[in-house]
Amino acid sequence: MSIDALGRRLWRGVAPARRWAFFSCLIAGYLCHIYAFTNLIPNSDGLSRVFDPQQMTVSGRWFLHYASALNNFTQMPAVIGLMSLLFLALAAALATDLLGLRSRLLSALAGAVMALFPCVGYTFLYLFTASAYCLAIFLAVWSVWLARRGNLGWPFGVIALALSMGTYQAYAAVAIALSLLTVFRAVLDPASDFRGTLRLGLRLVSYLAAGAVLYYIVLRVFLAVKGLELLSYLGMDAASAGYPFARLPGLIVETYKQVIAFFFLPGSADGFASLPFAILNLLALGMGVGAVWAVFSGRGLWKEKWRPAGGLVLLALLPLGMNFMQVLSPYSAPTPLMKYAFVAVYLLVLLVLDRADGLPAPAAPWRLLAPAGAVWCAALLLFCLNTNNLLYTASAQAHRATESYATRLLTRIESCEGYEPGMEIAIVGAVPADQIVSDIPSYAQVDHYSVPLNSVLPLNKHLYSYLSDWLNFPADELSEETMLAISDSPEFQAMPLYPAQGSVQVLDGRVVVRMAEEYTPKSDYEIAYENRR
Image (cartoon, rainbow, N blue to C red):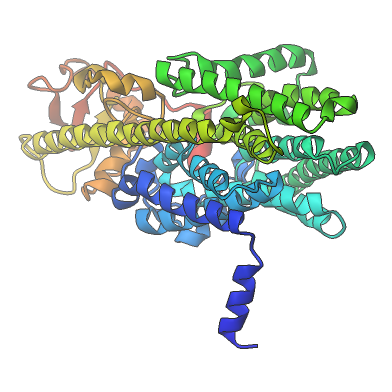
């Protein structure tokens, strides 16, 4: 067989709806995120990650180093953007296969939603890990796809899930949410029976449990071989000492509250909700309920009692599954980066619309469900397009403000009386938030700790990284002992705060800049993080 013939055979072997999902995700993703792929927009974490080997075993991410090797551990926007969207597009094709979407249009919309969901834009603000994290999303989706097939697919699905969690633990929620949707699809399928659906559910539950166990076993091996302990990041170290089962009921309630707030409460923490977003989600809820009713009525699924009962249980579990990070990491609230699994809500709506679209001779109101769903999804995509680029715009402006501030600081340092090139530079304190202010109202929607509105330099160490790696000005951070000694000296105490005259001086052969009243020592977490391996 010629290579062209083999290519045609492979192309024809992929269902048209899956191809639509793939290319829609790829093209829509590029159009939405092109600014992130053609600019370098650092947040505070990205300042020290122009090049970084991503050795994050101490945070439980033992596979991140190997996944990040795809982009040579370097922030290269165009390369990372290409690889990220290829992984997301593959995930979209597999997800639509899991959901059994038949409509090409609805499959294309599913792919576009998976690429434009605002948590993806939030991920691209962490550009140094974006391709690895998108690989983890693909591995999570692929793991469910493999596990559903059974036989040899099941163990490979377990391995894929462990690798996904080893890249970023939050993407276990993607696998959980898709597993619930896969079983729900079987509930809506008249060809499935109770025993087959139950076996499918048990198979997926067992694969999820086995994948989590395998992840943890490999993590313990990495920690033992490297002689490391987990950092306090997101309570990982506390979790290793034992899970707080007494808090579990409260955590479950909090998990549901966070999901409701994300979709329906404008201005909620760690979300992107606005009034239009809440209205779109209310419309999605109405269409979803209407489509489920149409499917159950039109196909007579109410007659089999296990179907409505099982469907209600699965729908009730979905918020818990897609926000499982709150249960997995009970010592901190999930950030938007950890909430990509929330896209499952929109995949669920498209799933039931697809099933309602296939009803034989539906009543007049139900005929409008799929077209109305397409219009709704177009409005949702417009919201996502705006939100993602609002993330980029706010972050880019904060970077420009930071560059301006740091450039002026360098001018003051180099013009300081007594300054000589190569001198040690002691910058005591971080950039005061009130010295770089952005009061653009729309930025409030994306005001999260990783979307800086004023400066990307929240800590003293970030300023040194910025000077060295971004402005190419050689400035090595001084030791804790030296910084504390400078901060305690009477000469330093007599200096005014920057940018007042006299806030930059040469003391004992080094340039000293007083940005704060005194030096704040690094926490144990910061020190351990800097020495990670």
